[in-house]
Image 1: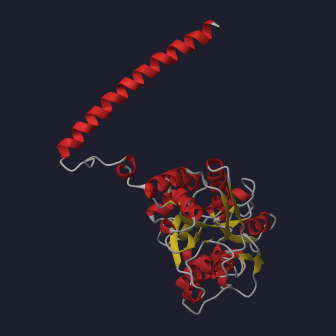
Image 2: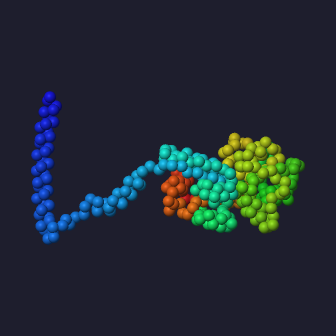
Length: 334
């Protein structure tokens, strides 16, 4: 009973105060209207001050949490990064689901052209014929460089006699012009070549930017190669073959146990020092087998009508997104 009485007195007091304040405001309002000369208020309403109803709606939309699903397909070189980036992105946006595959750069770009995925991951640049196909499908392919990467040349851990290779020797080995390890300082044993398959951007990169760059535009892979579906498969094959050789992006080396393969230092030429691939040697230009890694979208992702595409690419290029790539050996672009 005491509590109720207290509320009653308090309510009465508040009502009197509100009434008094209201009277004062009305009086002031009348004076201001008289001073204006035309009876109209000279100050904007709350809606006008905030920019109108559209501005209020925009602010509300900006505060809404992202939701929905996003699919990324393509390069197995980029895939280790994408998987880690997805974990962080989904943690920040619990109502978002992002999936990724690793069917190769060519497969990812084809899926993008066929409008099966909004983002294609590639370890090579899109070809002109692919650009033409995308445009014919009503797409505007846009390239975002997400990292720089070094291509590691790997052999079996027991292959220690070969201390290093030159850029040209790598080209000749995969072109089939050097076929025995003894030709490069190793044991007398036939070299077993492991490569990616044709869907891989790394397969194309090694042929176009290593073999053909060193040996001429007509040069190509040896006919005697063992094609692998993805980088982990090639690394695993070399880990079990004392005479094998393979290539993989730095990010892929974490896909197998440490020490399962040996990374060979590479020199630009006979007169240059050989370097192992790393962020530092790629940045300095000392390691000669380096390239860009890319995401392809329909138009500039910063202007995308798909909020998930826009937000995901922004995250990848953010300091946090770039730091994730650095942790697995990629060179940041920012």
